[in-house]
Length: 433
Image 1: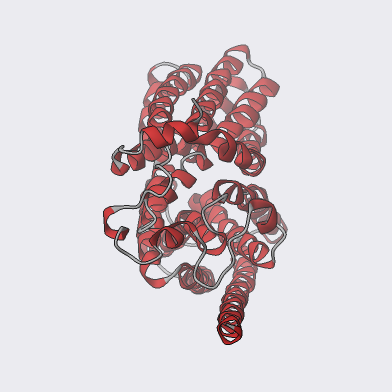
Image 2: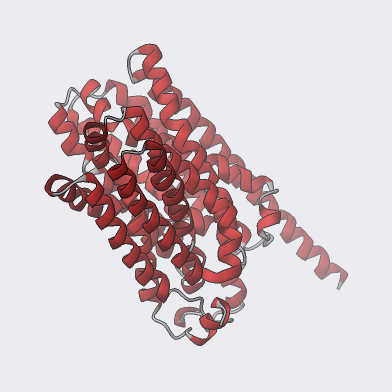
């Protein structure tokens, strides 16, 4: 039986448990954010250079973005359950393979398993439940997808302490083996419960609304619903892509250099900086559910505009801030925007293109994440090596964020034009009738 048929049979499932299943998948793959716990142990145990160990992380982020793009159509064709199970196998195999490569002392195998295979599992796992959530929560698109990707942002909170304990008490290889098995089980359980609702299903609060089914599956009023192939050639898609690229570049720059920036700019000790950095996962995850839930009320375009304005101000003042915790608070605010950008994206894409092929469209948009995961840290590293400080890097990113704000304003203008054209077309049709 296909996933589509299964979805029709099992449409009486509790949509809250569907959301919980999505969280289980995202919590598992979100462990990538705790990758730093492996950095020093791998350097010390294997003798690998810092850049070599970091390369596995960069490969994983790059691969996940492009896996999401190319396998988005797989999710649409075979459904969320099979996609989620495939993601569980890939990510579990990647983690366990990483443990084996550490035991064998093979860096190429480590890059291939953790970076390539694991990255594919993350990319497929990230998009597999999103389209399903949008169909189960047409009344709260932002909140539902924000809840799921909150799990991704908070994944480090589970992996950090558990992984560190396993490394200290046993070995790095054991940590990879145990976590790989744990995440395989969690992802398998989550994927097994995923199913699309029956055709025409609506939540209780929408059943009496006029044109409720069309509202649940279509783009925003006045905006044409597009297929994935049509979406990726549209101007509004590439505007969203650029906004996501800039938002991710800004956030991932801070994720990569939070500790040394706190020490160099804020004057924090290494211990204090490490302590503060540990809180980033909370704001990453919390920002996802806060901003995505808010976007259901204020609109997604307005929310992305707020991201850009907040970060422009933050990057402008950070070099002049006095006090470790003032600087840390500013960083936390930026990180909420970073997480919120991911959380609002699926719902925004469904607003702009409809839910019909949103998993595939979401996959295409996530290539911005893969590119930014390399570009953001590399830009900061280049400026740091050239100037010896983070001030210029922050100012350069500030200028890039201004471009992002201009893009959001242009996108709002284009959406307004589309609505005006639609209104004019309806009025013309009524006149002809």
